[in-house]
Amino acid sequence: MPELPEVETTCKGILPHLVNKTIASVIIRQPKLRWPIPLKIKKTLPNQKVLSVERRAKYILINFKKGTLILHLGMSGSLRIVKSKQAYDKHDHFDLLLKNGNCLRLHDPRRFGSVLWTQKPALEHKLLCQLGPEPLTDNFTTEYLYTLSRKRKVNIKQFIMNTHIVVGVGNIYASEALFLSGIHPRKTAGSISQARYETLVSSIKQVLSAAIKQGGTTLKDFTQSDGKPGYFKQQLNVYGRKGEPCLICNKPVSHCVLGQRATYYCTQCQK
Ligand SMILES: [Zn+2]
Image 1: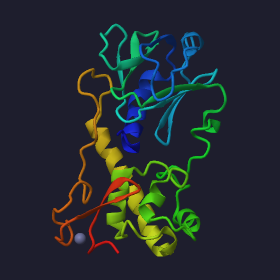
Image 2: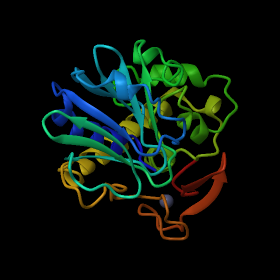
Image 3: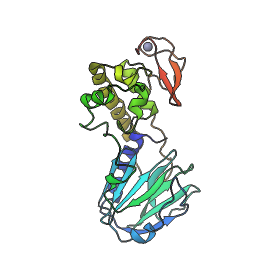
Image 4: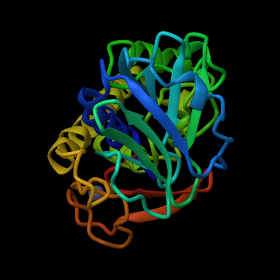
């Protein structure tokens, strides 16, 4: 599943190809994504100029004077810039054709992605208005997370993966950040000290920044039609390493399921 680092890199990659460019037409080959693609954008978008492209959580927002196109990559979606005349693949469900002959193409085999349109400020959209802060901004602080955590009985892993608390901490990053912080994933959010939250907040920022940095080198060219962007290859300390030696203490990495998600940790290094 594309996580925040992949979405951030995608957003940065497509941005220079879209901003100040004018839409020629819209092709919807398969409208049945997670939600139906609104067919009216075929009439609304032509001749509209892209004002800006930004990311909020895992949504990519393409802003026009008349409104915002809200894209989500779902489980398997990817975006490329291709020539409009380039032949499309089976799972290329949506094209945003530009007047310069280029095209933003959405490829999504599992069709859990989405293409939505709003005429109101995008951040007020029901999918976006209740999201917590971005983890890599100054709004995501120790004080913020510590204060919210008081009296919370949920385990810390599910707490940091809750998008109402903070966005972008996906399953892999939650395991990795907790390992770096020395915090056991089952520990109750409300029982963790402020000092440990300080370590956790910086670990979350660290794992996400590292993944984005890695992604920047992996996914340099969004105009290549071959080689779909996949998961960033990165150094993982615990995730997916069940039974393998902990990189710090050599004890076999443990595995459990929390909130129906695979969870990896070291019983010796994480308390
Ligand atoms: Zn260990």
